[in-house]
Structure formats: C-alpha cells, structure tokens
Image (tube, rainbow, N blue to C red; front, side):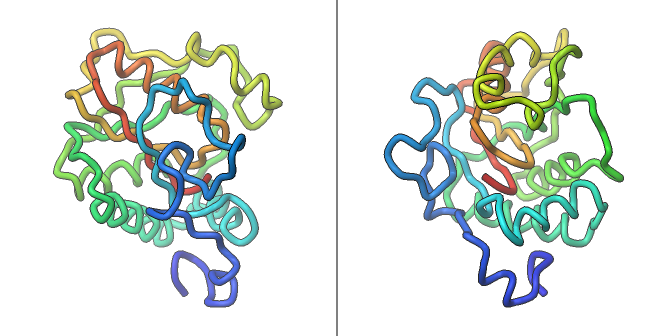
Length: 199
C-alpha cells in the first residue's frame, strides 16, 4: 500500500505534482485553467480529485485515517522541497466553512508536517464569517462570487512574513485560495503559495 492505495488503484490515479500547471495544479488545457486575476502564486497538488484518489481524500477527511493523512502530508512536503518552493515564514491553513463532519482536523495535520519540513510556524490567522454555504454546495458561479466578503484576517493577526504557504485539502475553482491570498496580502504578505491534496 502507498498513499492509502493498492498498486492497481494507484495506477489509476492521475498524479499531478511538479508536472502540472503552476497556475491551477492540473494537467489543464487552454480555457480550463484558473482565472487570470488570482492573487495566489503557484499551486502544488498531489493528484486529480477523481476515482480512487477522491476516495483517499474522503477517507482521511471524514474517516480519520491518520496514518494515510500523515503519509500524504509528507508526500506534499517532499514535493514542495523538490519543486524549490520559496521557504515560507509561516504555513497558514485555509479557514473551514463551519460544517464539520470530520473526526480530526486534517488541515492541522497537513500544516504541522509542512511547517516542520519548512522550518516555519503554523499561523491560524484566517477566519470565515458565517452566512455562506460551503463551496461544495454551490454551483460554479456561486463558488466564484463573494468569498472575499466572508474570508478575513483575524483582528490584530500578523500573517507572519512576506512569503506564506496556504494549505487546503481540495482545489476546485481557486476562489477560496484567491480570497485567502487577498486577506493575507492585505495583512502584509507579498507571495502566497497554495498546497493541496487534490485538484
């Protein structure tokens, strides 16, 4: 077993990593990339969010498989190092949407391992105001609009430095990452790099 999958299932996974588009983390085609005006920098992800990989991510998010979660975190940290990501002054988790069916905090585990690898602290400086449905419950237009009104830098919080790693579990439209990057840059960050388990 590797990354929570048997060899046959792993062979069906579209690994993205360093060979994917730096803008969206996917093996994209023209017209299918992230919006041109996003404020985050390079995107790094482990694999495409479908087939066996979708099940792996769902298992660690909601099933609490800490062993696999730690393996995924270490794989992501190794990719960031191999890809020459700028060393961050802090690692920042994306804020949750308020609906929590998870048996443990996957983002916290990912951030701890990435922070250990990068030699930087974890800073939980972002928050999300209530009143908006989780992204997964919205259509494409709804996902792309209005998040900047809900994601914000906590009062008095210091993002931690000019270069930050933003961590989320799944990247879809990039709207959450863009809103997070905007809040962090308003607080003084200059570059925000996104690391995720799936795209």
